[in-house]
Image (cartoon, rainbow, N blue to C red; front, side):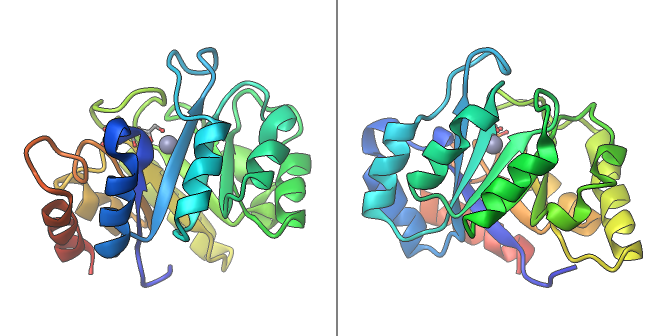
Length: 222
Ligand code: DX5
Ligand code: ZN
């Protein structure tokens, strides 16, 4: 397992009317990356951030941008998102026909490739793509909305995945997304997560300034 934990900010939980201000605060306070949620209203029952916003964000920040596609047809759209300048990209296992091909397309561009798994999706789907992956996104809530409670079985899933990777001598990052709260962060890290996504449960809390949330988070993970 990597020693350092990377903590990312879920941009869909930031203040949309003050997005640049929030991005600057995230930069100044040492956030490791931006997590950029794209939703199509079909694979998940909600709409998220879009390509135009990604291009705008890319223009104003050098923070790594991690795109999470929650869409039915990732094959049709990944090139646009890569062209827009993301640094890492994941798509979901559940609606995708040619997973290994897509992972290769991402890696061929020098972009970190990840596969995202819903809470109910078993780990054995990873068996024959491990060498194609830079990271696995374990959804710790069902994707689509901020503010949901952790699906408890996903903690065991993280630790089972870390064991599986260690047994094979692989150092692939495990990203967790959903209810990454002050209470859950230590449990997720102990289970083997190395890339966290902070949303409304820790980073973007009502009545707490971003710098204060970040200090509390970093005190837990470093
Ligand atoms: C979905 C999003 C949200 C977001 C939520 O992929 O990425 O799940 O992080 O953060 P919380 O659960 O803390 O509101
Ligand atoms: Zn996400």
